[in-house]
Length: 115
Image (cartoon, rainbow, N blue to C red; front, side, top):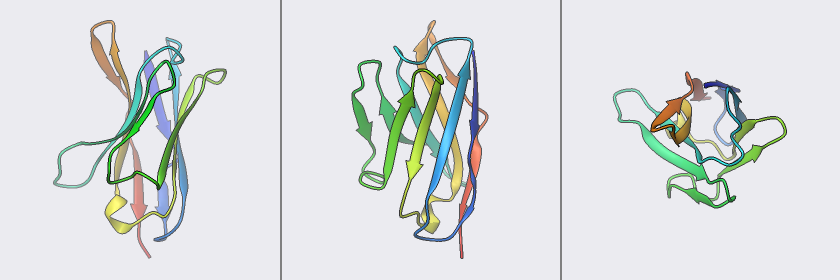
């Protein structure tokens, strides 16, 4: 299983970005997928999760601004991020949860929110 995250970059405050996480080695449709982030000098932070049944959950810090989605045909997970703030600056990671007894992580994509 491999997860390839992409879509990060430099964006101004108030701007938007869409992150992608392309999976290979397994189909993500029936599985729990999630996004996390890690800012410098901070612990990795949970952001959002989508289950195989389509249930979605968000952390309070991103609720109303970020949207998690999944394209089963493309085997890709997305995170649409709107109204970005400087405090959203971090490396963003996707995760395939609890598959074959373990979690799988993407390599991370850097998002920098700055003017």
